[in-house]
Image (tube, rainbow over all chains, first blue to last red; front, side, top):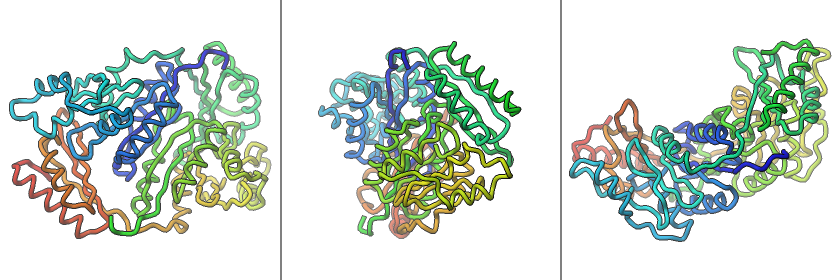
Length: 247
Length: 247
């Protein structure tokens, strides 16, 4: 790519329930789509267990390696919610009750409902900013380039929207797809030539198998619309020449 | 846990299409469920781009850290399928055309259809064993403790079934769920006491939000049925005492 590099990002999904297979993670896909639309390159995701030393290690590895790090999970009121503790430890700061978070939660719950368990959610690492949570009020946390979000998808999605003004992206990645009638094995070598001839376009070949039929999605991605268009023209010309159907 | 540690596993999902948000990964959940049922502890998953140096680095990190490493994606016939190349490089071996893989593919395709692109799928790192692929024949690869599988879910699932006889697990993790009518903030502190009193049982609290109502799944996990049962009895007694509905 000759254009300036876009900001990079990583996701750390914190949750035994994902690793056990009990829960299908969807937050990664939501965040990935959000970032791609904004021109931020998601470079890596990890899913790790609810264990404090492990969370600390991965948060520190990722925040040093990428411009933005998003975590999901582990900021609720129960004993297994230890992400705030881990993030405070990763940054080497205390985790006191925070006046801003306390005020939000205290105003939200009916009298007697702001329980000791829920008061845990008012603990914010020193230096942390709050991420607005319009769904259930308990805030997320921004510590420098680390964004600590809830695991419940509806809440995570709302927090992500709250973060939008903070996240400057580069030119968004553009993409175009050609769906090929048939397996990718018929087009592999010709496609490689097109990929080599269009160095500013990334061309991926994604086979699928549905109802006992093979098909292939060819996805071209670039930040430059003209170069993207040229690659798609070349792909379609190749398929036409090979008498392979596409849409 | 006083029982002998179970084998550990990790997953490396290789795919720009996952990182861009274009595709929702489901292979991780399939593998996670498979491993949990067999008493193998999935400890970490990573999703990384289709870039050879990055794949090499992560495969080497993971195969040193875990008993089993499963990769998905990047073993098809096109130019962006570079996982076999990366695995060979990670192990420091050549990647020749393999007689066994060649014979399988040559027998599978009609005359003239075993194209140059498809011949790429007969390349196996030196020392690698084949993983049977009953769906589309092109084999996966086992290199020591690394299992290289396809990205297409139907094919990946078939390869995983082929691997089953090779994977010795420990006692499977047992689990039981109590679904609570209401938010987890009401039960956090009492639940912590139960968790502390049942050290061989892991108790997770997973809130959800559906149709404008909060609920919580309390999931107890243990390898010991009696200890699991005792923890569930304690959880239900707690909820009854607090007059909180559950099912």
